[in-house]
Length: 217
Image 1 (cartoon, rainbow, N blue to C red):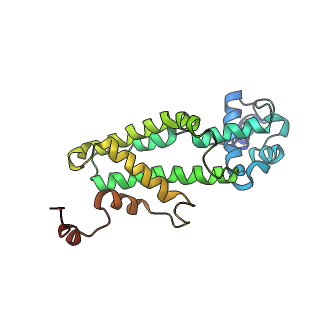
Image 2: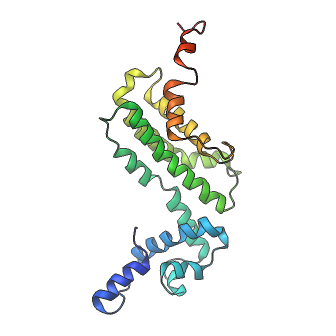
Image 3: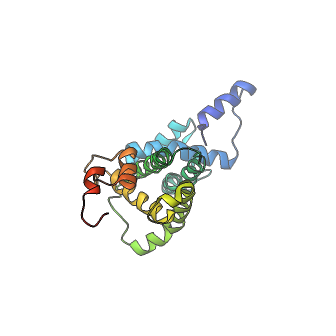
C-alpha cells in the first residue's frame, strides 16, 4: 500500500473533520509499510512506539491488528520477500525491445530486489542461510520457479540465439545477478546490470581473442 496511515487519516480528516477508522486490512498494510524502512534503519530494536509515530497513529492501534511487535516485524519480512511486485515489473517488460536492452531491464529489476532483501536481512541480523537449509530451499523454490518462468518469457523471442535453453539462461543470469549483487560475495563492489548482461551475452574474452582460441572454431 502506498499511503501511510497518517496520510489516509489526514485526507479523511480534511473531508469530514475527523479521522475515519481504517478497515483492518488497510490498517495492517499501512503499518507494515511504516515498519519496513524502520527495520532497515534500526533492525529488530525498533519499538512499537517508533512504528506508531511513523504511521501517525496511537501505539495501541498496532495491537488491534497484530498481537505483538514480533508478529508485525514478521509481516514486514514477508512483505520484503514477496516476489509479486518484482514479477509484475518483469511482466511489464516490452518483448519488442532488443535482447540486450530487455536483459538489462530484467537484471535491473532482479538486482534492485536482491539488494533490498540483502539490506533488510542484514538489518535483521541475518548473516547467511538458515541452519535448516534444505527446508529453506523448499520454501523458496516456488518463488524461484516463478522467477525463472518470468525470465524465460523475456528471453523467449531470442531463444534460437542461445547455446542453452532459455530456462538455463534464466538460471545462470539469476546466479550471476545474485553473486554480483551480494555485498559480501562481491566484496562491496557490486556488478552493474550492464556488466552482468555482458558476462552472460559476451563472455569475458574480446572477440579477436575468442576467435583465436584453439578448439573454439
